[in-house]
Every structure is written in structure tokens, then in C-alpha cells.
Image 1 (cartoon, rainbow, N blue to C red):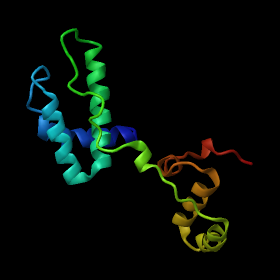
Image 2: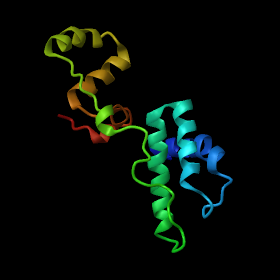
Image 3: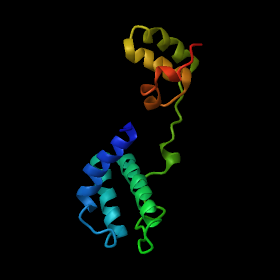
Image 4: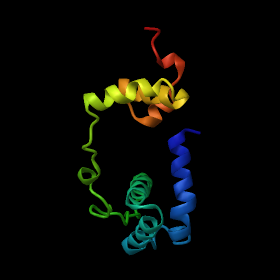
Length: 138
């Protein structure tokens, strides 16, 4: 299974099903979803609540496309955070990079991965799951 698929399955098993898993799909209300998101936010944080909401929205939208009677209880504005508020603004300066670069050579696999992240400007999971065939010999 893909790493993201594992994360989604784990989130549904641990966070979604215990809260709303016993409620019938036609009986599920917006307030049930909101309470579930509040529980997730308390236990795992706002970002995890938003991820669970996004995955649940996707599943409900898929189901709504298959069933004439189903209306998704998820509406715009249910997210717990705004992407702009979560956006990172901190960037390492050239001087900071000059200090850290030689130290990464001594940090083994972690150092090599961090160098790859810095050079490629890719996300951590993309670099961690990279295959040799995806890297040019150049």
C-alpha cells in the first residue's frame, strides 16, 4: 500500500470510525462531523483534523456521485485552520546554509537526506520514498 493510503486508513480507523462509524450515512449530520473534528483537534491537533476532513470530504463526494439520495454533511468553512495561516515563511539564509552544510557530511544518512532536500527543494516524503531509477546518473 502507498504511504498516503496507509495514513488515510489509519486516520479512518483511529479517528473517524470511533466517532461517526456507527451512524448511518443518511443519518449523519453536520454536527456529528463537527464534533468528530473537535475531538481530533483536541487529541491530534488542528492540522490532523483538517486532513481527516479533507479525506472524509473526498469519500463523501465520491459516494454522492454514486447515490442520488445522499447529500454530504460537509460544507465549506468546516476546516479548523486556514492554509495561509499554516504557510511557512522562514527560509535559511546563505550564511546559515554555509554553517550547516559541512556538518551534514558527518550526519550519515540523515545528513545525506537533508542535503538532498535542500538541493532538490522537494518534500520530505518525496525524497524518503525516492527510487534510484528516478535519479539521473548525472
